[in-house]
Image (cartoon, rainbow, N blue to C red):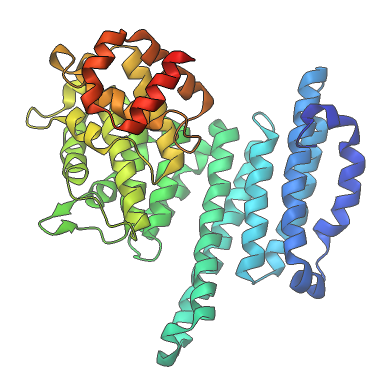
Length: 419
């Protein structure tokens, strides 16, 4: 069904009838020995929901089947959520719930159902936090290096993250109905940000609220924006925030908020904090989380200079800082999005990016040549745009820039021009 999508519409119902007994099996032995099967079933169930929605849209029909599948899937999985205490099982279930909600698309999830799902997700997070607290309290000093204990806590953290992903999926498909849930989200975020263990969870929920509810979420910004800026603070010896994941989430929050008019008053301070991070030494290779956080800081600074160039303090040279860090490599998802924005600015001949008398052009083209052809760093559309940029630059100008290109980049440029 994944390959033929809407063409599989006629087979959705019989396929669902075959899957449902596996999905609903609450037997303890099945959970113990076939837990992965349930996780796969949920992902397939999400695909069936997506196909049902696509098929209905193609046929001009109401998406009743997709709605029925979602309701059945949620009812079944909620019963399993209430029974299970195994974090690995719960992780698979909540991940599948998020995928099912995204797959159904907009206009399906109504206010009452949404509020019910939100309540269940917060309840699931609370139970997970309580299990973690109990495990830590009971943990013997000799168990500090127990891999099984560490794995269990990792699974609990992933479970809480998956519950947040369910909330994000609800915002994505039903933003209007999610707005009444902002007060309870504000309360939870405020509580989580006070906890070292759950601070990142609170920041991620804040990011998704910014992304999906946009400026309609402004009433609760005072709850999380102070922590966003605190997590981006730099000291004499490096980041004040030890948790790289918190720095990443905080940078992403700035990235998302930059286009909103309500963020204008905070933009200058965001520039200052991000400039310090971007201009600091790159984390060591083994610090993968730190390097991803740096990529997100660069992406946030690019978003700021793109959306709010007039708010940049005069002492900060944003584009030279950004160009020195391009291309982004460690957070591939963010790299693809940022490189697409970057090439769009190049094609628009952004004066700030190109610099006085095109003084930045060599660095710009060098970065684009490095990105071109790498599926990890750019999508097909971005790749095509990069090729077009090089084809528009006069050959004699490119030859003048040759000293600024590596041999590998020169070969790629020649291939782009000959193609």
